[in-house]
Image (tube, rainbow, N blue to C red):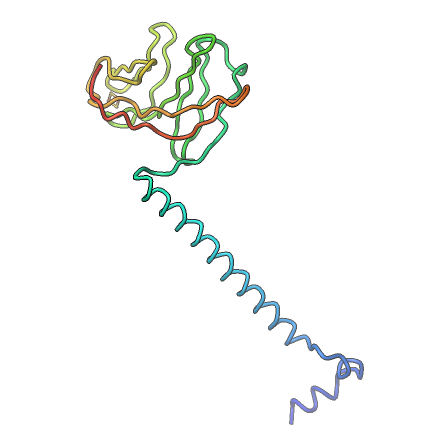
Length: 173
Ligand code: FES
């Protein structure tokens, strides 16, 4: 009864118009749910593709990411960046006119941040005086037992692109 009264209180044009407010909201919710399902499905397929690719190649898949341009740093200059994820600090060092080296910035001892010492030409960890070769990431001195993971760089024109991480399982220099 109350429904009939409600309907009759609405303007005449609403009765002629085939879509009502409540139905519109319903359609919007349904479209939104469809959007969520499709987006989730797309993300699921994307992650599955990355998983299958890394499983088939036997190594993890890394994103390609521009790190710097070749004229951005002077010789001995340093740039900090994050790779492959936002929680992975890395350090890029221009070692010569044509040479660049990039490593994870986490010391392989207890994860303190290493920095480049231009004076000594090496990467140094301030926590326990662990030193690493800037040429290879190998341990030169101190408690670390493993080299710094190396960021694999590729030159594309004047751009340096990070293409992966070499964990460098070999021990000390
Ligand atoms: S954390 Fe780097 S030497 Fe200990």
